[in-house]
Image (tube, rainbow, N blue to C red):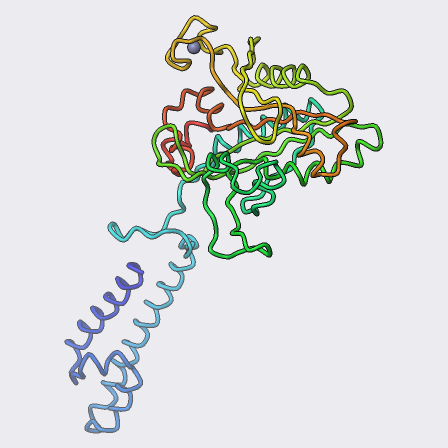
Length: 349
Ligand SMILES: [Zn+2]
């Protein structure tokens, strides 16, 4: 643009100079249009016409030459990318942005790693839903109406109601998928194969936010059902998974807990992978970290999915994976994950 303005200014300059030397002095506005000048010829005295015509032709030739030169120079210019950002301050010609490769959010990168660990152990992955109903959130999981344990899963609900007159729910745990997965893979049991599924997904809780609490976070649920499955299988599976993830031998222990959808239920702890039980700030100097909730699938949950609990047994667990990731990389604030802050995300390239 700057280039063209300069050229127009040059043309005006030449015109001004030329018009000054001309005996008949037309206005610069008329001079810009050569045809208007030519139209003046019949208005001049006959003896002046030849000289004016000659000067006019010279002017025309000069201007034509300038146009040709300008056109030739234009063809030498680099092509301009009109979609590139334009620096309004320096008015410099557009330049392409410097390219920067993006990277996966550590939540998703870690989720892929966790799914891979379980895939090597024979688990199929099925993603959970981000909106679900009361039946899958509670009813199918042995939380009867009015059960006090429902209060521990305070999530967000829609104003719209489902066919049973209940609001839809942003799931507070990935266990909402248990009933669906058990029904879908029930034919495995009839063929003599186990049901082995992990369910990664986003879950929601109505939490006040602080460095340890987020309203939106990530879980991986696991479900395993076959004949003769007992708590020993559960503990071995989870121990193997945690050892693979943290890349070292770990000790694990369980303590009794309560969930309506497992019986017995456990709180599962691992030896601190950072201090190896010597005590550090990650494990609050206890040497142990409580990492997940798990248990043997409640017979009512199996029955609800059409599986005979007298023939088949199974275990299930749910683990908040953002906490695993936070511990692995020493991330101090859970809110970083969903913040979209580039200073945080660039560290995980
Ligand atoms: Zn420790």
